[in-house]
Image (tube, rainbow, N blue to C red):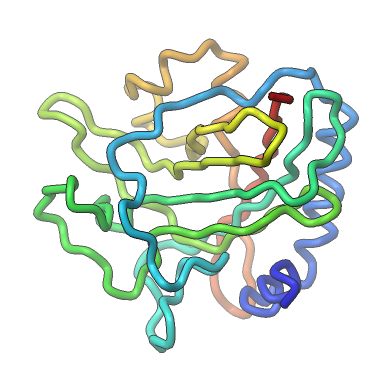
Length: 220
């Protein structure tokens, strides 16, 4: 099945193709040849992958219930360091649920897990280098007694012939961004590459945050 077509059907997002293509064209026009900033893998990359790993993280398997939390649509274009779209790149994401907890044995938080959230998704980019995910805005969580991590989504992007990229997406406007030790290690230009502005929209009567996160890979 065409993953992209399946996503559009699941998410009810017929118009997202135009948005992603337009934003992708903008990225190609303004490409500065620099790789998307590298961020830590973190301790919660899945040890065991769920059976359901599709692009819709808001529904798990055959469950009828939707994951709790604010709906998010994130899409983008994966390009090489000459601004050319990369077809077939594997894009993986993983994140906490709305309570800020990961479905991982190393997360010992007392916050409840969401049984209806998928926690992990993967897809390959299409012929235009595009990818799409439907998820929820993750909750913030305590990384230590003095450090609360802002909402973020982990990414790993890979394809033979390119350097594997591990990075994180952050939500623009979140006050915790200014105090995050990992994000603040980046200079302002690199922060701008991973801090994404989301716009609110109504899709099939539901409020959704939509954002574009374009990614650049370097040749191996």
